[in-house]
Amino acid sequence: MMLFSNQPGDEGLPGDERARVMAAVMTTTLMGVFDGTMINIALPSMANAMQVSANVAVWFANGYLLSAAMTLAIFAALAARIGYRRVFLAGLTTFTLTSLGCALAKTPEVLIGMRILQGIGGAATLSIAPAILRSVFPGRLLGRILGLHALLIASSTAIAPVLGGTILDTLSWQWLFAINIIPGSIALLLAWRALPRKAAVDSAPFDTMGAVLSAALLGSTIMTANSFQHVLQSAGQESVTWALIAMVSAIAFIWHIRRSRAPLLPPVMFKNSRFTLAALTSLASFVSQGITFVALPFLFQSVYGYSPVVSALLFTPWPIGIVLIAPHAGRWADTLSAPLISTIGLIIFVVGLVLLATLPSSPSAWNICLRSLVCGVGFGCFQSPNNREMLSNVARENASYASGVLSIVRTFGQCLGAAVVGVLLTVAAAPEHQTLDEQTVHLALWIAVIASTGSVLFSLSRLRPAVRAAA
Image 1 (spheres, rainbow, N blue to C red):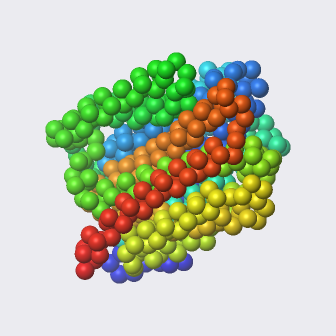
Image 2: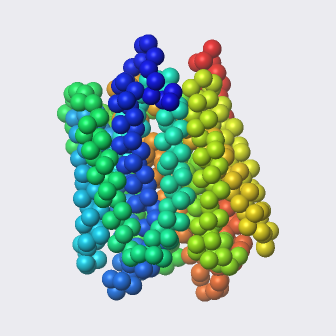
Image 3: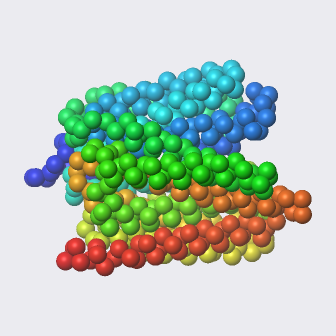
């Protein structure tokens, strides 16, 4: 296989060692993404089993998301100072052990605590996974390996609800966590044997104040997004409070990193317009994806009357489209213009979203699947070239920071997208709107079209600098 063949002048690791590292990173990424998404479908069952309210049960999911979001930037910076190997192994060990803890939890308090720790372990691995791949694979293969990594993340996000529903239909909710133990142990063994023992690339002291401000900023932003659904109650006081905390934290964090000698995130990265535009493009696209992934289940189940399992299956063409195109897009990005390829993918993605937003009142399953397939093809063509553009436009010693930014924009984009749907559903659930109507869901999809159109504009603005740099 070309990914593991060696050519003269290749940097990174020999082919057989690359294969072991790739297996460890991909397995860990698969577990992390699955665990962050498929738990949502199990929340009602878990609430009934533990006899808790929905407000408590939602923290079985939010605890993981919040702790992961708060620590993504911290682990990206820590990896640059103590090495990828230590951070990845510690994170994978924590994630695997807390998966067992979640499966054995008997009380909601213990389960929430385990989920918070599990989110920290997941953040340690997901934040630096692309940086590890860049460090062990030669530059000529960067687009291809990032294409496979992007394919895995996107496909896992779409497939996770189907797997979660299948497990719940045949087993108990505890197996949603227990299934991580064996693959987690295998990945840990592979990572222990294959990850190189390289010296840290940044010898500066760790930026503790930057870490605190970063955690406050990221955590309060997530809480702001989550509280949007209560914006119609209590005059939106909860949302306003969290939004103010996020604004103050953002100002303080920016002020700090611009004056610190060893900041948590080097500002020099964002002076590269191609890196910054790639990050903004990714953020806007994941907002669109987050809206779509939350809105479509309501459309399929509440409007069209499909069962949860069938609704999950209607998502299948999306990952199929990614599987079909993402590896090729990554390979094209290694030889052609990555911004051009990702822009073409985004345009196809917008077309697919428009097709979904214009679904008729009683479409056939084939009609839905074909429109979803167009979205998957477009997103698969966009993501890996865009990720390559981000990682290849920073110095190699800043790869872990760029990898952290990549994970942050993905997480925040999806959270903001979900928040948009939450606001719309809150409006639809108001007394004057007793039922969830089709117009509300279609409005959410049109907002996704607007967000993805914004990502196209960001992407178009970088084409001329990219062509000029290539020339």
